[in-house]
Amino acid sequence: MRVIAGTARSLPLKTVDGKDTRPTTDRIKETLFNILAPYLPGCRFLDLFSGSGGIGIEALSRGAVSCVFVESGKKAAACIRDNLVFTKLDAGASLYTADVFAALPALREKGPFDVIFMDPPYGRQLEKRVLESLSSEPFHSLMGPDALIVVEADRHTDFSYVQSLGFQTVKEKNYKTNMHLFLQRA
Image 1: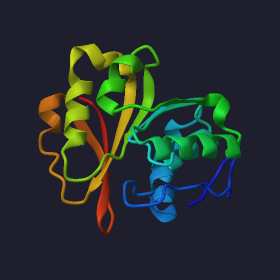
Image 2: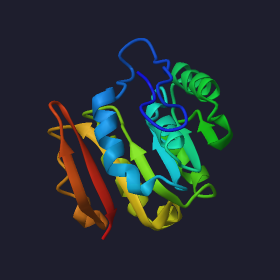
Image 3: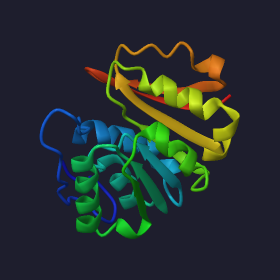
């Protein structure tokens, strides 16, 4: 895994051993960031379920002014710290080593965010729980007026509920086994 573009271009990133994280492949990451390109310069980025931090680091490398990483795994959080220092992108970064749902209340003072990315473990409906939280009044401050939410999920994940939560689908990009869903407030 590496940084694809920007100030840290081509730098290799550490990943966490084992199957607890699924680093996004370079090819999928490149496609994702081609779509995100107009949103990145000067944006405030939130990376939930960060894994080894590759997505948030790519955002910082490509011009995001800040990125908050939220990762509950201690090994993965240590990997994020190492990757941020190695890429010299640590100045614009904050790391919460906590469960996403425990971290959300504390993140209200860090917002609003322009892009919120999440890549939760598949098959546990964690993306639905995050979207439910983001749609509730206490968490509206996490999203800027034109905030983009990007969910990486298994390709067969059901998102038929998003409209009932007050979100609209802006784009859906399907890959072989997974997908990216792009949402904004309706």
